Image (cartoon, rainbow, N blue to C red; front, side, top):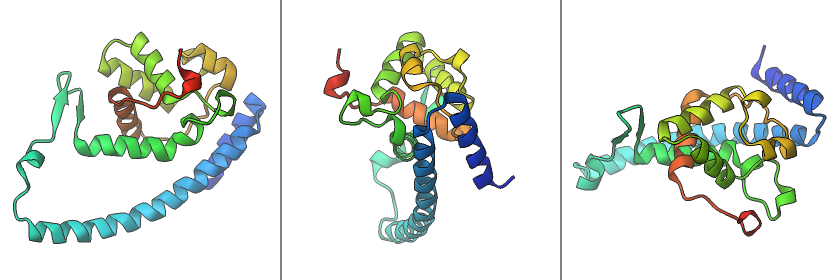
Length: 189
């Protein structure tokens, strides 16, 4: 089945299950944004490769700060680097912000904000590995029985399966765990 038809089928099933047409609008917007992002990304990569080649010719040796950017966390289970942190933020902004991004009011939110997700998952999962594994596992196949954010579940229902790769979800979860996330006034306790 072509990817477009799979997406339409997923959206249709989600609407039938949750009886909420807001998801149709969100999914369509998200699909269009991802298509545009893929086109832009391929052009940016081409420009980036040419730019990096020119920079490499200009500076034969990298500065000392860039030589050792990779560090391991918790016995090499998950690794982070400057590149993966940037990737995580970029992935979060392009794949997740449409629903989880901060809106002007609580009522305008389509899903819980990242700060609430970060707080709840850090409270339940004590290590970074457990936190990342829980986020990734839930997002690969979201189910009501596996949810830990009961207030969000009641308000927003279970999120649809978005089809993100495990690698992308790991980068996103890593970014959520490590970052100081925006906390809107209406969200503060």
